[in-house]
Length: 343
Ligand SMILES: *Cc1c(COP(=O)(O)O)cnc(C)c1O
Image 1 (cartoon, rainbow, N blue to C red):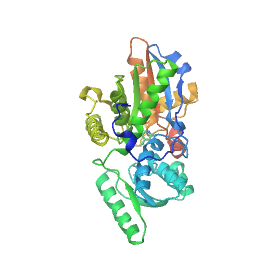
Image 2 (cartoon, rainbow, N blue to C red):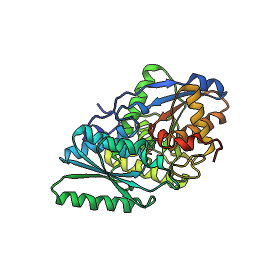
Image 3 (cartoon, rainbow, N blue to C red):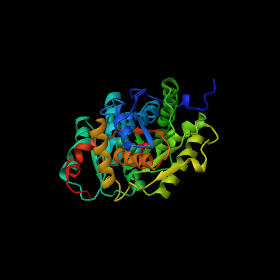
């Protein structure tokens, strides 16, 4: 049967995430918002070592690694990256070694940032840690990782590198094509009708995969990406490129039109991994009205964008916020989150 998703079923995959994750209504916050009824897709509950969106993405990276008979995974990310922690977890579960390269991406980081949250988990999960002094040099970081991989090969290991820079098959985005199919099936059975979705847009794989999957299956619901890594115009280019790469990978014509790619960088400043006032407020509101815990790097900013969109609507619309996880970051940012004065 043609599900509209091309070669998806032929890609190597290894199951890591607890799915389907729930979709829940947020009644208390919705009551505060004249224009919107809020729902949340609980991808913080994907289960793999504190969950999050990377469990879905890694199903395809690790699937490929296993199909190549790799015995060691290599990955780069920010010091508090959820991707590297999830990769360390997936590797542990599959009996593979994991080498993590942590980039210095966040200025003025304190001791908690360097030792708690995801860093603590990386140690517990048994990963080998390396550091990379630059935070804005994705190609340099990938090259260093390939150098480490080359050394491992000399030692008789079989490394598999998960790249950071763009220009590779978007295997992570495929995980969110699958998530789009899951969401549409859930909306079908629950009779929730959703007028818009909001998601954090970092590497852009989650955003692109979700958007591509929805359009490929004929759903025209708008998807707003909230920039957490770079400004809006650069992010637009990234997401467009990932959609084009997905089309190639799946052997489809891209169903995504230029106007489908929506991004806002209203909640990005002062930069990656740095808190701002709207994000801090969004984190407090979600926690205090709904016991929904959001992180300062990704989901706090995405939820600030959700609240802003909700407040801009005149008629009552239903918005689905994609909770992409990141909760261990709360502990690493503890001192900043508790500061009295907003930055
Ligand atoms: C990585 C991450 C994102 C961004 O996902 P991309 O696919 O890189 O855009 C969002 N939220 C959390 C918690 C993440 O760890």
